[in-house]
Image 1: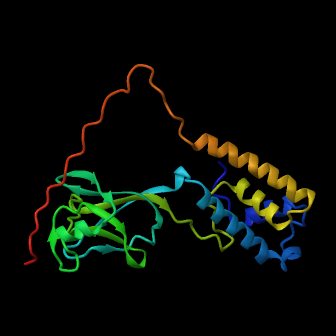
Image 2: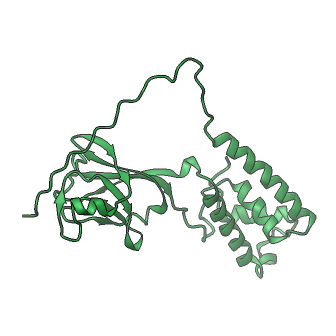
Image 3: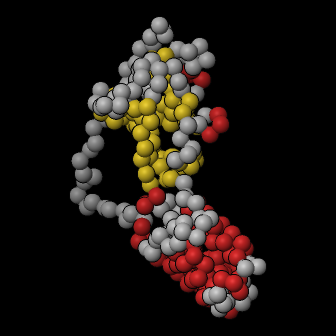
Amino acid sequence: MARGSTLVKLLDDLRAELHLSLNPAHNNQVRDKQVKALQSTQEWLWDDFTWPHLRTRKNYQLQAGQFLYDVGADFDIDRIERIEVKDGGVWRELDAGIDPGHYASHDTELDQRSWPVRRWRIGENEQVEVWPIPDTNGTADDLEGYFKVTGIRRLNPLVDDAHRADLDSQLVYLYAAAKLDPESKHGKFALNLANRRLAKLKAHLTPRRQFKMFGIGRCEPPRRMFVGQYRPPS
């Protein structure tokens, strides 16, 4: 994939695809429209597919008595794939979802704290809520009591000339060209090329299913159950 093109390079490629002048002065009146087309196209492509190179992980420190955490600056909240907590030196995956039965066991509104945290959900104000409320602080030296978020990161800005695209540059400028001039032969040709390239990239990046002819292979051991005990805050 040809990633990392600057906004200036994308504008040049877009104008060349539409057979427009490459002189920036000749495009002053439509530059904002061209930039917006490139930005919106990259945003659409980002939302359309789980691009592996945009998958990232980040650790956050759990704080005693705190159950809501901001991760939105790093991740799109709806594209979080997995959350793990480090407990006893091991990263353990949290289950998604917190229902009334869980609150009946450890009531967040009553500040009932325990360890380890076992579940998560998307809380108010685009924050991650963990349950139960942790009763200890995470430690930075060994990451004990930290939680790790894995998901698709947000796109970097594509506003200034030196900003670089996160996604394949050909996809971005070809789809943008088709969007700006959908009825012309140049726009239709760009759309055809873009569709072919997108299909090729998706096929290349989508994991292929593997089949085993003899048995199902080694069984994974069952996940260890969390055992928590309510400890009232001191």
